[in-house]
Image 1 (cartoon, rainbow, N blue to C red):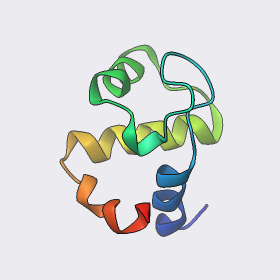
Image 2 (spheres, rainbow, N blue to C red; image 1 turned 120 degrees about the vertical axis):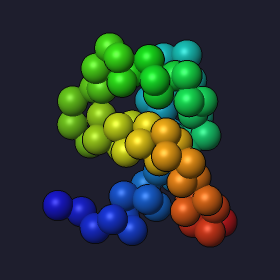
Image 3 (cartoon, helix red, strand yellow; image 1 turned 180 degrees about the vertical axis):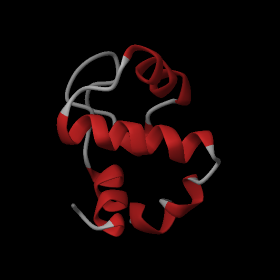
Image 4 (cartoon, helix red, strand yellow; image 1 turned 90 degrees about the horizontal axis):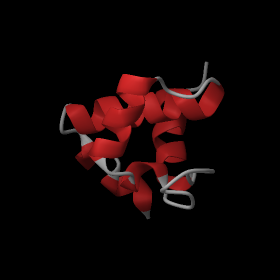
Length: 71
């Protein structure tokens, strides 16, 4: 399993590969879009894990954890 720091870094670097927000960095995806995935089901694999993590971060107001990593 990847380290927590590495997961947070990926959230600030990886871009959404498809859909309405294609090309948007995962940490910049709007909460309603992440909520939609939470209701419909996250994709399988690494992308799904990252989207679910971002959903939890936004749900709990923890976006400040990503700010130092966005540089």
